[in-house]
Structures are given as structure tokens and as C-alpha cells.
Amino acid sequence: MDCKGIIFDMDGTLIDSMGYWHRIGSITLAYLGKTPREPDFDRRVYRADEAEIVRLYEGYGIHFSGRAEFVETYYAAMRSCYEKVQPLPGAVDFLEKMKAAGKKMCVATATRSDLSLPVLERLGLMRYFEFLLCCADVGARKDKPDIYLQSAGRMGLTVGETVVFEDALYCVRTAKNAGFRVVGVLDPTSEQREIDGVKALADRFITGYAELLEGEKCAG
Image 1: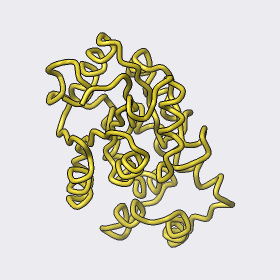
Image 2: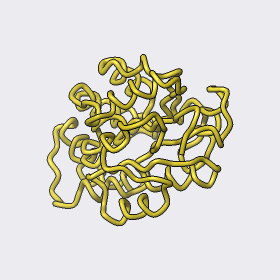
Image 3: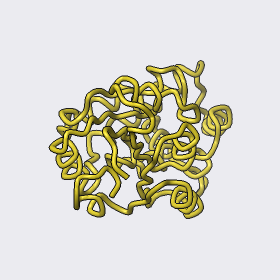
């Protein structure tokens, strides 16, 4: 499966940050000076929609004035975590190989640019990419194909010329439904049914970038 360009997700696909996102509930509570009482608090927060998350925090006496304050609190809590994250093993070597092979590359992430851009710059990864595009930039989450279609278009490529690298099942599904070929990247912090879903749906599934470091194709 060769290609002219690659769209990379960031969290769990390029950088080892998903462990923090799976613990965002307790991380946010700690940032606000609280400790979770329920052993499954992180799981409940991670799987809940925003309205339910707000209700969970209200159980700790935490009240947000609106969605903007809620989102800003989440991002503030995560900033210290992003100062510690590192690239996934082999990711830099793979990016270097793809750049040398003349592939166009970009990052398409659900994480806002004020959090995603600093970590990519700190790790020296932005030099490999044409641009960074966030869901906030396109006005749609990754359950819609907008971010993938705009990314390919900005690279001057068609859907058929572009491969998407993703770790989350719903993102893999969105990209596949839009006609992209997809490489699923293992996120070991995900539940097994999510991992199995990615394996079943992606054109290729990898447990690490070492599997792709032979040859110059995007996905072997």
C-alpha cells in the first residue's frame, strides 16, 4: 500500500500521551485539589459525554460556569503532562524515512493547537510536517471526515493518494468511510474491544513503528 502523503493523528499515534488522557478525570481532580473516591472514576469520565462529566465533577463540589471554563480546566490540567510525553518508539525514525522518501506529511489532531503545537515543537517533530490541523480549526470532530479531507486537500493530494494513521476506533472508521486507506496504531491503554475493532477495520494494524521501518512504503 504505497502513497504520496500521510495524515498522522497525534495522541497515541505519534506521541505516548493516551495514558494521560485515560486518566484525565483524576488528573483534573488533582489539579483542582481533589482526590477521586470511586476506583472507576477515570473510566467513567473517559467514556462519558460532556454533560455527564460535568455532573461527575459536581459530585466533588466542582462547578463550571459553562463549557468554556470546563474545557480550559481540562487543558490546564493536561499541560504539565504534555511537558513529559515522548514520541512513540520508532516514530521519529519512520518520519525521517518518509521525509527522505519525499512523502508529504501533516498532523490532524483533536487536541487544540495551544497544547498540540508546543509538544510537537518541543520534541522536534514539526520539521517533518507540512502543517498541523486541529478539529477546532475545521469546526468538526473526528466523527466527521472534514479534518481528513481538508488535510489531504492542503497537501495537494487526493483521498486515494493519502494514508491516515490513527489509534482510535471511531477515527479509523471515519477515515475509512471517507475512502482513505488507514494504518491502525496500537494504543495499549485502550480496552481490548477497541483494539480488536481497529485491527478489524484498518487496512493494516501495527503494534509499533519498527514494523514499518523496512522499505519506503507508507504501510508496507
